[in-house]
Length: 79
Image (cartoon, rainbow, N blue to C red; front, side, top):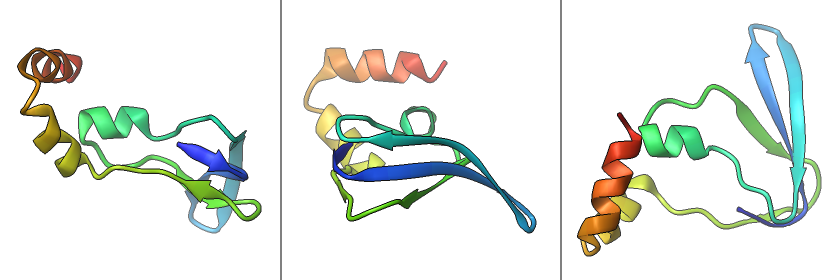
C-alpha cells in the first residue's frame, strides 16, 4: 500500500527495462502474487521519497488462522 509518494512498475528483460505503469498514494501492487504465493513478474522502484506499508505473506496467513471463515475464502481464491 502506498502511503505517500509514487512508484514505477516495470519489467526487466535482459538489458531492457519496460515501464508498465506508475502508481501513487492510496494504490496497491503485488496482490496477485501475494494471494497465489507466486514469484513476482514485475519490479517496482520508487520515483520519489515514497512510504509503503506491507505485510509478509507468512504473517498474514498466521493471522488469518484466527478467522476460519476468512481463511477458507482466502484459500478458495487460490483455486
